[in-house]
Length: 192
Image (cartoon, rainbow, N blue to C red; front, top):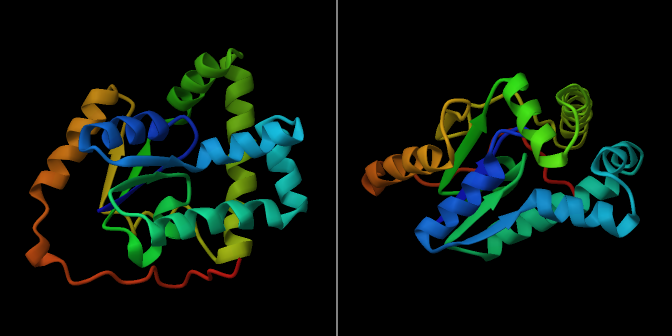
């Protein structure tokens, strides 16, 4: 089974995806880890790397190609990134979207990255705006369209265990007899 976990920065997607993979005995692949390692290789922050990606579309396309290839080639996997649900396309069995209010996400990022909540908020908004423009330009994806997701969870009042328990409850209720088959996500251009 291929499960995608998506959501904005600070929503808890990395924590939840890793915990879910562990609980299910699945592998976990994180687009964020790939993105951060690419930024580190170039010796720049993720904010700067995002700015570079605005000028060099190959950065996003390479990352997205890796996500799509991983989705196509692997099973028993939790694939996690902002676009995992979109990039996995017809290969995804379950698409999950995690979110939380901006103030909660900024506080989490500030704590994780040892910066002020104000700086984290400003960087998070700038990053989200930049990414949304690129997703629309490259693939005709409206990141605010949550209609492709099987489950959306507001993580503001749930700890990691509560998020994973919610997802597990959903997965336990899955009835394959009701599955109408996997369909590609409509309107998305996979032109890497």
